[in-house]
Length: 119
Length: 110
Image (cartoon, rainbow over all chains, first blue to last red):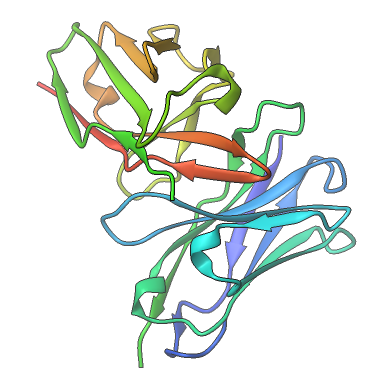
């Protein structure tokens, strides 16, 4: 069973870069796709992007190239960087594993971490 | 930009049956979008219920089922229970490595 745990600063200053890490326990890092999803307080879920161990990746076009996802298989970590943040980026950020058997669903989720953007 | 549509809210009586839908602002949902459904209660991370249109995730009761109804994906709960009261999200795979979530349906059981 794979377990995912997000971590990072809970408070980020506007215009700065948000940086989060997802630590993975169990499962294989190199045969899975990893994704980040966020949820503003009281609102719905928004897909941010994904990465595969080959560095193949893609992002939500609405984030306008502000997002970068990276993978460190030796540390068993997946990271998210979101630049030039504003209050609109305040959200709970989840990491999730994408099913790798062709079903295109998110089959494991972390507990999420709240990031507040404020000065 | 494509919008995935869901009913904002729905209510069902205990023991009743409810069908939630997941559509597209333009076009029809088919199995090629690999629709999946997630259940979320406040303060919790989403739980996978259904993937690839109608495959039930491990441990999910068989009162939850997925299908394509007309031009939408559908999640049907048969014999609703009090602890089914949650928000349900659908996700569609748009191809080219892009996923889009619906806005979620808040289900009340009363």
